[in-house]
Image 1 (cartoon, helix red, strand yellow):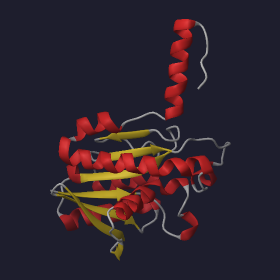
Image 2 (spheres, one colour; image 1 turned 120 degrees about the horizontal axis):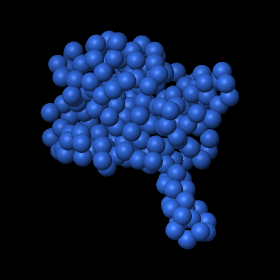
Image 3 (tube, helix red, strand yellow; image 1 turned 45 degrees about the horizontal axis):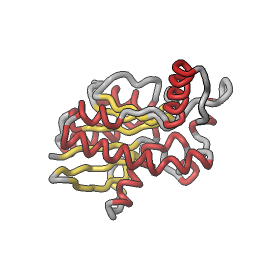
Image 4 (cartoon, one colour; image 1 turned 30 degrees about the vertical axis):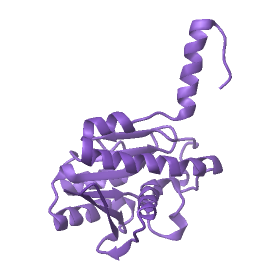
Length: 210
């Protein structure tokens, strides 16, 4: 069983640690944990890792975000994979930082990389994992925000997020999409704490520390 796992981002040192490169960061973490190196190949950097008899081809497209579909289409055809064996990892402005959402298909949500993949594959029925990066920017500053570096607090949270997503991809291959989604789809810890506090307030009429 073979899967193509695509992490979306932009090539170049100036983009390396930006919010828009979350997909690259996850694949870099996976390769490092597996002691494998990426090699430069057609349309991107590629590495292979294995898990319980499954093979995962990790792809970081070199086409820049808005043309990600070119790389995905090429490697799907090269590997002769069906759409159900494609998993794409991307950042998402529509989710609070740290929220993870896995879905078996759906719209791009305004993400140019996802939109181009849908266009080139002529289908939106492929799995995607979206990682919330928040949307705390003023009007007209969206591009500046996604291409800016994470805060120190956010940087500290990235390794754990990457670890959870890597396990989620592995789970898709072993226990299936539905169960993997139940395990992976999360809300940020702070949001959970706020909701717990609100629940206690309703029950006791006082606000605990969070």
